[in-house]
Image 1: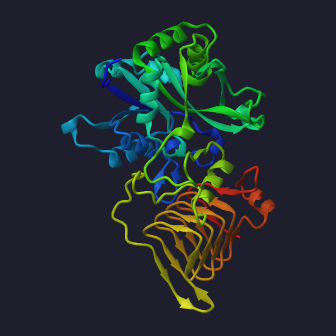
Image 2 (image 1 turned 90 degrees about the vertical axis):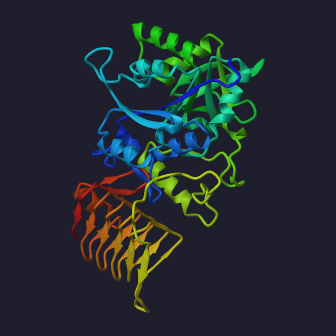
Length: 414
């Protein structure tokens, strides 16, 4: 391997995100808003850019218009140093078909990769919330001599059906002995039987070795053409796959609370819980770490405003995030995340909730433990999250943990 290998980053952003419905009914999962001002895609892109990797292609497919627009408006670099973030839609280069899986997505992009001629590919998912210095993972990959490296993190054994499960070689702890994608059950770790080592969906690969693996996978009779289901087990079986322990990753500005924080936000409850992590007094994930910023484009928005200080209607927010452009006008917001241009009017209450941009909560309306998608209007005296049966009758989604989710553009009447 060269002393200074050429590196190209690939962000896999083509998944449907069906478990996040209805938030993904009109947008790609990586374009789903998060944390008041961000989109999910901003987290992997910020990590790559902060790591010094600024040649990035984003593979898109389903409902990608808002995602493509966000990337083109936000992630623009000067071409002087050949830095770029380029969305690449499915192009049917291998036949009249869309991407069959994440491995097929990379395989259909080989022509673009060959134009760059990288020595190493950094391949990451587009829908996780975390901070990570990928340069440290690449350094270990090179030092280990592996052809393929998987980032791993401990997760409960009970969640084995949600992750790729990594089993390391007892004689060579840094190498993977077996990789199984989303097994029904799995054994726990020797030092903690309740935990397993799970794949984060982030990979580092030597380009030539990955091309060979993709060629074999393309011709295989029984394959899902998936990075986790097929490519990672291929390298593990050949004893050519290393594992990178995410807990060893050191990010500037991280504290003991949010070090090695990583959340898969694949379900509505995981998405909700990750938001609640942001608004703790000492947050589980600190958005205010300016040494490793999460970048986005908030446009030319005015500051948030809080008005009316009368005893019976005081505009205020506690234990909450309130994005620019929002006005709390005589209403109460508690333990919630409000995106841009939200309005909360007099005597209204928003508690334990997530409001996307453009939501309007009119007078005396009450919102409890809910997610309201973009441009939802809650009329006077209406409620969400108070009466579960009523929410179901109105066609709203209720998560397994009881969070009510209202689709984009809905007008809520009592």
